[in-house]
Length: 106
Image (cartoon, rainbow, N blue to C red; front, side, top):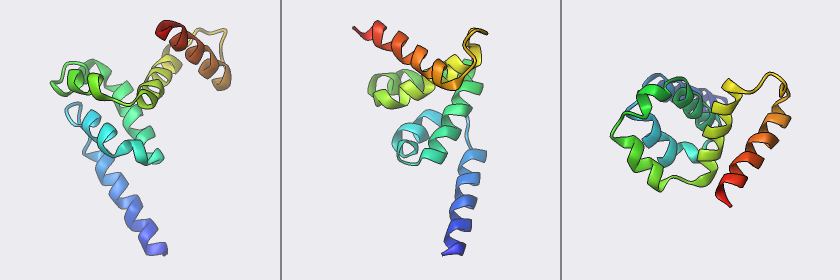
């Protein structure tokens, strides 16, 4: 069993090392959604490289077909980067972002 865990960790490291702005969304929406560890790495990569990701041909395609939960993760990760200084706790930030996003949908 231990060797399987090592193999899984190695595979995850390789996948993350090979991420590019062109392939991050494809990986995120095809299989990253089902693997929380990879999902968080993909979201982090996307946020770090958003200026490049948004210019790819994959971005508009995935915007139209993505699961809402993934976009919520992305929005919250981006918001944490630019959170107002008076909102410092992660839980408060999450609640603030959820309320904001829900108000935009209604």
